[in-house]
Image (cartoon, rainbow, N blue to C red):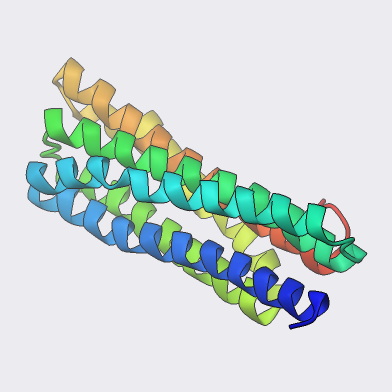
Length: 211
């Protein structure tokens, strides 16, 4: 096997690590909806414990990226992809952390307000769709989809405002109010991280920073 063929294969493996990491998170978004809707504390505990899988994949991505850069002299487009994979992995790891944080909140709090619960689960479903579409855009190099994903973070931000500035005042328990605000903030951060991922993909495809 020539050095170039090995490099191309290793680069494909690097991308596959990103897709695998994203798929794990996509599945955990579904689990998170179940945790909130059904007050499933056992599933919440499982989500927290499984965060190690995400961390291990980030380490693999970083190691693979360093190996690719040091073993070859990547052309500009390949180097952009490698750098973007490192940054995407970091954002994916942060998403995993925020999912674990929400699961931890759910272990100590049951949200009974149906309107607030609906808004929070809607934020989760929007985030899942954004992340899934981001991976489609990365695989297909669909720049228009990348732009759409970045703009969609506004939808999550709008719901965050509704929850924290309006709906929250319907909750009379001060402790629960604080936990709802925490949950909404974690979800808003998840949206920001997916927006970052979209911007990293934009940089990979264009060589330019997203404005």
